[in-house]
Length: 142
Length: 142
Image (cartoon, rainbow over all chains, first blue to last red; front, side, top):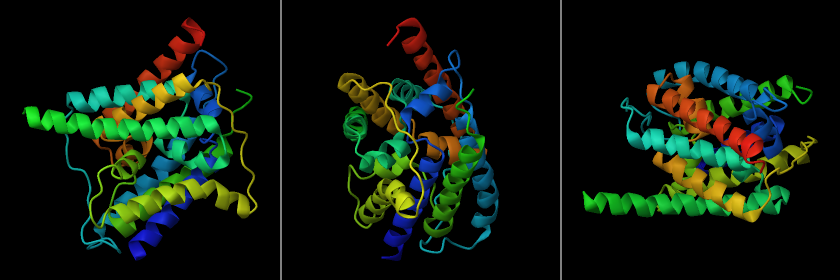
């Protein structure tokens, strides 16, 4: 139960961060991605603030014997650069550039009553599902 | 640059970083939204409830911010045709799962851990994001 409450609370902090940073506004995100237009560098400061805080926290937290509500730290260890990483990340950037929404803001904007956000989020979950199907077909053919 | 908002960007970004640190401290995991939300598609026992709680927290975040007296930013969707939104959502959903992360998992968490995979992925999605907006806005005139 504590895990569920903690996850909800952390989601709330994340959602408030996205709201204050104005990342829930696709126009703001697109004006960052529009280098040749009326460029708005704000998003770089969002990334800078987030990376700065996380970099400090991540240096301290894993020194604990274990997480407070789980048995082990699950930190990614892979270092290989494979085609999936490159193709997946490149595709993600294309979709991000089309609509100005990435997964966090796509969810955070949902309760604010914008039909466009709902279309995007539903399609994003369809994309998640499409990946699961693709992954299973790939695994079988191996 | 008249829309540049460095203070709110840094503040919001820091909260996003804080939620990433809290998630590591409590759950021992990377706070990647595409991974957490995408994991809802194929339910794993004991795993589904906290994933859903995080997503619901993310959705509730802006509402709680308003309830605390915060002012929502202006939200506008420069790209609002359902066809573009659905295409963008599908590509973001599939691409983030294939590439193992999005702006949060790779861009914030991975970069702050100095993960080579995440730094390469972040470079890739930033590049295709910039390129997509350039092509759509300045070449195709969408």
